[in-house]
Amino acid sequence: IRNYKWIENHELFFGEFMGNCYLIMLFPNLFSYELFELYLPGSSWNPGNEIKASTDMEDFYGRKTYASSTAGGYYAARLPILEYLEKEKKQASVIAIRIELPSYWAALGVWVCREATKKVMATKSLKFQDNKELLDSTKKIGMIKYGYDPSKLFKKSKVLENIKTQTTLGKWF
Image (cartoon, rainbow, N blue to C red; front, top):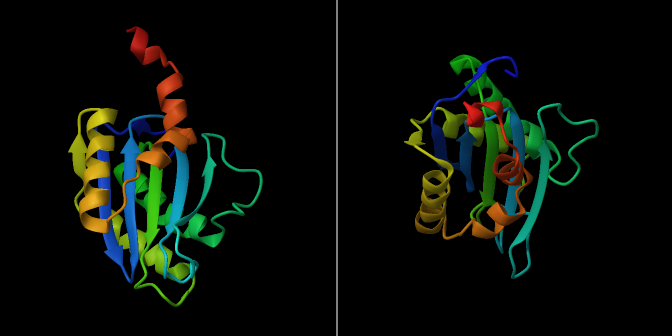
């Protein structure tokens, strides 16, 4: 995947399976991957009253250690995304947001994350011209469909920070 050309458009996939919602954003850039997991109050990993969150990421060169914050969910969500990129023969920077709803009250294992991501990646993506359109649409869909505004996550995203600050040779031509 790291040897393929970048995707042409900014893409957004979203969907839900068994109380696990995913918003998966693909940016035309070098491969990197970041997962944010949000545990809404009343979900299997959050009996409290406030949203809990965890995140892990890798850059173009991969990880040297296990993704300890999001653990197996990191790898379970990553696999269908990589399978999609392989099928398309493209690479992208990826931000995946998992929202665990209160309807997911019994932790069933990472297979649920894998299958939810697989279902989401099998849908038709929404395509956008630039980062702003993609991020604005992700915010709207997050609020309307899942009752969560991912704006705070965007500010903490290492992948987005890299996209904003790294200059590529393509920008000079």
